[in-house]
Image (cartoon, rainbow, N blue to C red):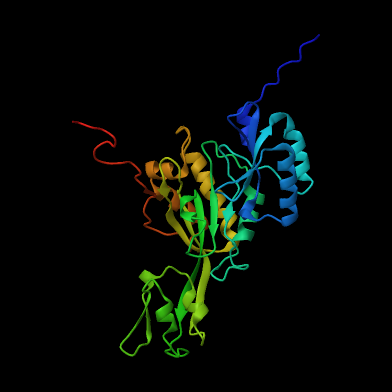
Length: 322
């Protein structure tokens, strides 16, 4: 009897395609591509059937708005991919490339939403998903308002919806709603109880515009605040603000520009994230590049990304010098 040749599995290539090796022999986790975390019900039903047919007793909901199929045998990969494709569901990716963008519900049904984050996530996914960085993973996140539920600032590039308010004193009823609604102390009363705007305290949430009964508060400009260099993991970092009031149609361009800068500056530095490159090379280089294409939105004098120190300080835990 002729012995069948052993099938060799290239784990690196599989991971690039969203197939992640598990502890069990020949078993993998299959990560699904779900930009913005939106999943049609019909597709969800198909995923459940595929998971039940080929996987384990459960699926896993990842922290980046994806479903992961557990305990998939590598011999079933082709069947899993083909059956998921029947419902339009694709497999995601891992490795040193742009990952599937995450997003909140945006302004479609969330009353706090200021920008259409779902549309932005779909556009970035369509144009840039899987783009190789050559260095490390590259994550993009969208928050529709300053509540920042998707935690945009801990993505390599993060977007937060923002509204710049303006006040027309001639329309003001002096009702005080804006003053009581502003939780940041950006609107305070003067001696006549009329509102005074303190721009340095404003988070650009737009609540004053939404609540004003006389339209004395109006939107001067709306767009995204853009953060760069954030990440989580073993050594977390909060991204730094690089642009304000970026329009929706500029989103793909700024992500692409930041990626190109990252690819060039990180050459020869090994496996390194964008935020670490910004700390080593200096953020001024990135700012100068972005100013060429986005002269009205880029923030000058911005600080580098902020490192979060997770180390325990002082005496070691669990030691006994007695």
